[in-house]
Length: 470
Image (tube, rainbow, N blue to C red; front, side):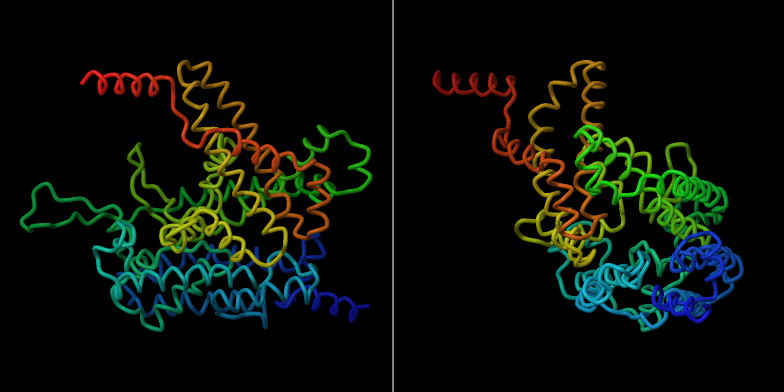
C-alpha cells in the first residue's frame, strides 16, 4: 500500500515528497502544499534578508549570492528535475509537454510557472540592455530611456535577478534597475529622496530612514488569509467544470447558467489573489516594493503589486479590469510588444500573451475573444459615455450597467482559460449561444468608429459657414 502511494505521489509531482502527509491531511495537492510551504518560508527569510543581510553591512555580491542560492533551492524543492532556466523557445516546448505528454493531468503549480516568470525577466532585460547599448537615446520613448541598462550585468547579477527567492515561484517580474538598487540598498533612497532645504552641498539629498514594511506585510497577509478562507468555503462549492455538465446545460435555464458561470468564475479568482498578494508581501518583508508616498503622506508598498482587488471587483470597463489584473505581466507585454510593434499592436500583444501562457487551446480562445470585445467596448464608450455625464444620477446608472456588463463579459471571456481544452470550451460557448461574440461583432459593425457629438457637428457647420462667407 505504501509503495503504491509513493508511486502515485511521484507521478503527481516532480518535486519533494516530504510534505505528502500534510497534503493528505488537508486535502490539498502536494505541489500546492510545496508551493505554499516555500512561500511561507520565503516570507520568514525575507525578514531575515532585510535585517541580517542589510546592504549597509553586506556587499551586493553576498546579497546576490544568497538570493540566488535560496531561489534555486525553492525551485528544486517544488519541481525537482524540472528545474530549468530558459527563454520563450524552451518555455513553449515545456508547455507542449504539459498538453501532449501529461494529457492535461499535470497539476496547476507545475514547472512552467517559474519558466514563465524567467521568460519575462530575460526578455525584459534583453530589451533594456539593447535600448541602453545599441540604440540612440533620441530614438527611445521616455519609459525606454528611463529603464535602459547601459552595461551588461555580471553573471551573478543575472542569476540573482532571474532566480532570486523573492520571485522565483510566482513572480512578479520587476524592473532590473529597481532590483539592483534594492540589492545595493539604494531602492528606498531613490524612491523617497528629497532635496535638502538648506544644504552646503549642491544637489544633496536628505538621508531617508528605511521605512518598516511590517504594517504593509500584515495587511497583505490578512488579505491572503481571507482568500484562503474563501477558497475552502466558496471556490470548492462552485467548480468551474459544472458549467459544462451535460445535465446542468440541458435542465437549467439560460439565466441560471449565466448566473452560475458568473459566480464560479468570481469564486476562482481568490486563488490568484492569494498567490500574488503573498508574493507581494514577501518582497515587502525584504524591504523591496516602495513606490513613493501616497496622498496621506504614507509610504506606498505597491511598486511590484500584481493585483488590485477592489479595482477588479468594481471594474466598469474591460480595460480597467485588465489593467488591475496581473499588473506586472501587463507592463511586460506593453514594454516588449505593444510599445515596440509597428502595426497591429493590440492583436499582437494578445497573441504574445496567449503564447506566453502556454499551448492549451483555451488560452487562445480567451485572448482571441478578447480582441473584438476590447474594440467593441472602446466603441461603446466613445459613442455613449458622454451622454451619461450630465448628472450624478445618470452617471451612477451608467456605472452600474457597465459594471454588470464588464463582469459578465469577463466571465464569458476567461471561461476557456479555466476549462483549457477545445471540447469543453465549445460546449460552454454553444450553451451560451456565442452571445458575447455576436454582440461584439455587431457593435463593431453598427457603431461608427469615430463618433461626432451634436456639439461638434454644430461647430463644424458653423466653421463651414464662415468659410463660405469668406
